[in-house]
Image (cartoon, rainbow, N blue to C red):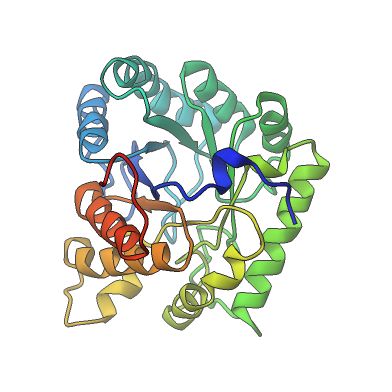
Length: 288
């Protein structure tokens, strides 16, 4: 059990992380934010609509995605992170920037430009130096579970007990991070909804979230617009038809103790999270 950090363990309002993909091939919004000025405007809009964090990524991790070099990731993210950090500091000083990458050199460049959270879908397995970077900087780091790699993770995902296997993997990665010098209070765990999982795997993980939350680390869930959501309620095949289901997942997550939600559609998910929070009997200066 990690040590208690008052900044993360107190009953804070749930954090909404707005997705900003600077890629031509992301599954939902690929190519929409390739222009740095437009990307910054979109990020500021998300901040104004209730995002606490803007998650900037320069490499697609959709099923079937091909890897790109660090230099290309850096070339995509820095022209956005630098001006965004400046403008957030003026208009939304409470909003932070996270860098969505598995590579320490990309993360280091993003930190120099103004990012203050690390979001690693490989949980430090692809480039262990990212854990050393988290230890050196003291910044929060999200460690996610993924079966396989993005290029083939959805080919035939298989588990004996998906909830137990994901939980034990994440706890092992949390121990590895702490062995590398990362403080327990810096670690956020993400079960990796849609990353090497079938619909039933995703549903099981969402049902079993209370067990993961009970392990003492903050938990993040990123189910926004994922394909499995479109299988319910007569929703269409397009990502735009999955907003209602995404908000339902957000409300469920808040109700069971998840405090970090990674989403594309900030305003409706902010509303869903705040209402779920209020129904739990919680209030703060932003919702009362």
